[in-house]
Every structure is written in structure tokens, then in C-alpha cells.
Image 1 (cartoon, rainbow, N blue to C red):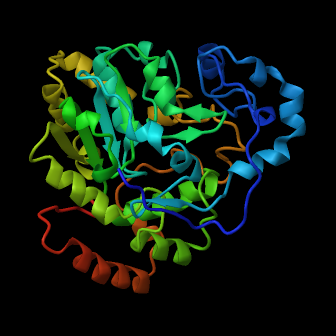
Image 2 (tube, one colour):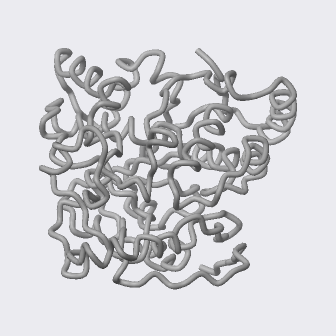
Image 3 (tube, helix red, strand yellow):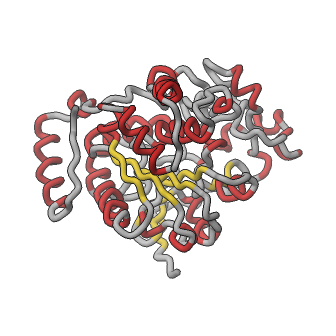
Length: 356
């Protein structure tokens, strides 16, 4: 595949070196870390490598870690992605899926972690303790996320036993071809654009692999033109919507899940050929509720260190509601957004609710 790579970063940042590595959390650390996470409690059940044991060196080089953060996005076929993903794009493109993989695909801030927790609960027959075996980002690896020396979703997935749960934010045209070849089942969750834009703005502020978001007005402009990580929301939701006609894709809506979680969980169970008693379904509804997940360190990302995700700026799990955009958009912004939305969504059969 030919890649049209356009680096939007003018400076030449220093390369990331092994001395910047840091270890990740064990399951016991994750379980114990219900409040704030010390920097060294990081993201894996694997034993730290020798490189990652040098805590002193890592601490002394904390400032240098900023080299990998807040860098500009780089385009792959017109889709802005994190620089580190693009550097290792051949790994992503050649990823080998397995026929029994379940792919969980979303545009960012559309309910990814929520549906991942629900599916893991379904796979484990509603046993919430089994779902606390590890952090959600280890139970459902983020396939394309590669950051040198820190994170490699491809490698994490290779080590996993089947059946695997696989997370992606890639637009449909960038998904590794093995998923289509193996006719894998896929769950796509879509959320209304205005709530996504607001949630993404706060996420940009706290998750430092993203570039600086700028003001809300500036970020909203970037969102509307697709100049944010993983590209245009409009193209993303429409692309997956069309693909569902030809492949085994269950297309869900965030607002439907908020309105009637039981109904949507039952849709998921039917799609996954799982038949669970009503008592178990009710347990899944409870353990995947926003308030419970927000307090669950295996689901709320508090085990990620603050130099990567700063929950004091904005928590990873912020509000989890439909219609919060009304607290952020001005009247003028809403009018401009609606006018642009009509143009971009014209001709699509997709219908969203901006509140419930």
C-alpha cells in the first residue's frame, strides 16, 4: 500500500531512547491503585524488562520524556495519526488477525472503554472479579498504538490467547486487511458529533500524546475539518456505517446505550452468540455503569501515570452523558456547526441524537 505521509511537525524532536522507559503495573498494583497512580505503576502485567528497572535513570530523565509528547500529528493517506504509529505503520498494516478475534472499533471518545468492559463481562459470564484481572487497556489492547519503548499494541496482541478482544480507532479504510480476509466479527460504537467534540477537547488536554488542543474555539475548528487524531468524525462514522452492509459489523449508538443499556447489551449478546440469564445481564448492566466504572481502577485509567494522562486536568471518565455539548457550545458555534454538519452528512442514512 502506498502511504502518503505528510509530517506536519516543523522541528526535529530528539529521538526516544531506552533510558526513558518505565515499568508498568502488575494486577496487584492496579487493584490497589484506586485513587492516584504513582508514576511507576504502569500498564502491563508483564515483568519489567531490565531497561525498565532503572527507576532512578527514568526519574532523572523525566523532562526528556516530553520529547514523545505534544508532537504534531502525521498523515497516513490523509488521516492524521500519532507520529509514533506512523513510524511503525508497516507493523499495523501487516497485523494478522485471527478468525475468532472480536474487533471493537470507534472514533475516539465514543464509548470505547464502556463497550470494551461490557464485552469482557459478557465473555466472562458477568464475573466482575475476572474482569478485574487487569486494566482494560491490557484486556483489550489498543492495536495500532505504538510508542517506542513504552507501548506496542501489535506485540501485546500477539502474546494473547484466543479469543482476543481488539480495540481500534482506525477509520475503515486503514484497518488491516486481515480483518476482512478472516471475516472477523466487529462492534462499532458511534456517538453524536457535538458530544464527541467536547469530550475529545478535554481528552486532548489530559492525554499528552496528543498535540496541544489550543482554545475550545480552535479545537472545534480542527475537529470540524478533521485535523485531529484519527481524522474526520464524519468520514469515520459514515465509512463504518457503509461497511456494515458487507461484513459482520454490529453498529451501536452511544445514545441508545445510555437510554436502554439492557436492550443494547442483549443486542451484543445475540451478536456474540451468548445466552446469559437475566440475573447475569443485570450484573453486567451494574458493573458497566458509569458510576461503577469511574470507581474501578481496572477501567478508569488511573493506573496510567500523570505524565502520560493527567487526571487532575480532566478525568479520563468525565461525565458519560448525552447532551453535555450544550454546556460548552455557544449559540454561534452551534449554528456554524449545524450548517457544516448538514453539508458533511448529506446523503447518508445515518441518524444521530444529540440528546436523549
